[in-house]
Amino acid sequence: MPTSRMLRRATPWLMLAPSLLVLVPFFVLPIAIMFRNSLARDNPATGMLMPEITVANYARILGDWFYAQIFLNSLAASFGVALLTLLIGYPFAYYLARWAGRRWLPVLMWVVYMPILVSVITRVFGWIVITADSGILNGLLLGAGILREPVRILFDISGMTIGMVHRYLPLMILPLANSIAKIDPRVLAASTSLGASGRDTFLRVVLPLSLPGVVAGFQLVTAVVLSDYVLPTLMGSTRFRILAPAVFDEAIGSVRWALAASLAMVMLAIVAVTMVALNLAMRRLAPWARGL
Amino acid sequence: MRCGPPRLLGFYVIIVSAFLVAPIAIAVVLSFSSVEQLLFPPPGLSLKWYLAAWNNDKFLSGFGVSTTIAAISSVIAGVAGTLAAVALNNFRFRGRAAMRALIVVPLVVPTIVIGLGLLQGFSKVGVGPGILAASLGHAVIGIPYVTYLVLAAMSNYDLRLDDASVTLGASRVGTFFRVTLPLIRSGVIAGVAFAFLMSFDQVSISLFLTRGDPLPLRLMQHIQYNADPSVAAVSAVLIVASLAVMLVAGHTLQQHDVGNLRRAR
Image (cartoon, rainbow over all chains, first blue to last red; front, side, top):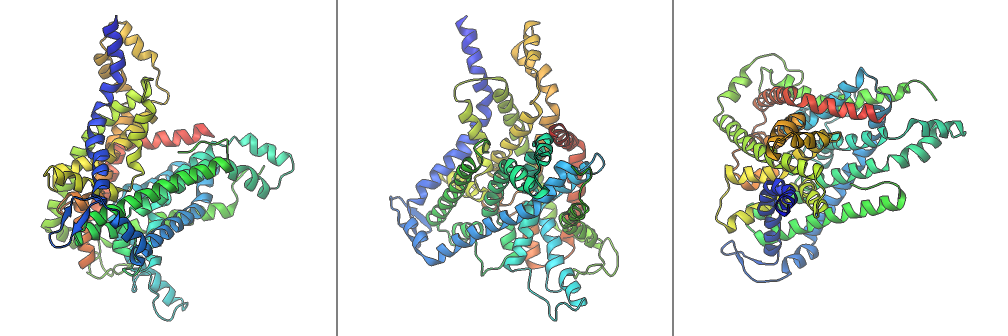
């Protein structure tokens, strides 16, 4: 019967309708409107948008050193934090995937999941206690005679970096552990029995085979660092301005919607280019693996 | 091959675990401090910061606002995400890949971009910041989580069960509620719980779509002006609450991931 066939064809779309009803008007459309606004002009006198089409905002944020500095800082922060989480997280993920036994695996999984589930404000509070000028870390270093006077960590790049590495380490560890766990142990045994040293086996077998996890983790972490508002605001320095607080300040503080929209569009472009570039790099380096 | 982990690696794992847990543990300990300064270890113990937090109207109303937004958005995300996951898993149709991409994309778009876009979009139709606007914004990032977790729960779902139900005379809708849904329940519960917790802790979208009244924004304002242990007291209560949510709902989630790691070995 044609009607029942039509019904069958419509079923998946009926089931997707609620998601479409949320995502089209409240995700796709707003970004389209914001793109249009990024081509408008702010009227500084009224705080309203002038309905014209101009690329002046883009010219301004890409030409002005003030904004260029923000982009460079943001890129440095997101790649730096992603690299740090990768270096710190890889051995941990390796242990999680290969060595953790029945007893420790659930414990370690909780250790990784807990920071994700605990409010970011809680974690920042803990780090403030640790990294403040009169905090635990400075107290220990002063007490041990390593320092003569407290070193500034909180409200500086280092404090923000510590907070971000802590916040995003689980996002790196989980995909890494997944991809390492997928490696067939017999491949490693083969490598060893063919005479490769432990170091060679790691560099030439384990590392390349875990590349999908490395790329997935890197993509996730770079994207979330770019949109982090809390850590730069609560732990960072006003001398090291980065994108998320800058977008908020332009939109709400200075009520320059068109300019804020253009900053957001460039941010979106940076994320998209990073994703695609990492996928392409992986296809070159590891043609057998599939991207995110 | 060696038959045990190198001792150095085990030591390293302990250090990284300590790094992950330390700030959370310290925040909990400090919530019982007897003084206002953030001294560790605290010179004395008291419950006065819990009292101070309870008497702080901004925290209390913030808790109400955040709970409302999280409840509305996680229910929307739960219904939409579950149905989407079943559609993507059980049907092959034209446009499936595009739909899958559309549902996942909100996860990689910076939340600050989503927030600003929604603010500008809502203002076009005259909707101001508030609980409704924030709930819809949070639902946008809740849907991918629910869809992902339900899809994971369906990874070894046997489609013949649906066919059997229909062959035996049940309607498609009846089959969904009486066969499919009970089988994927753990994924749905985990997804809704995760979406709830993510919404409760959301900052970037709430910045644009509320009047600064959800709990995380209240706590942020408080930390910026006077960092006292009352923030830690709220944090400790939230930790207990989110652990409770995860013990009820997330047990399945953890089991699932642990199981995945084991099976993949």
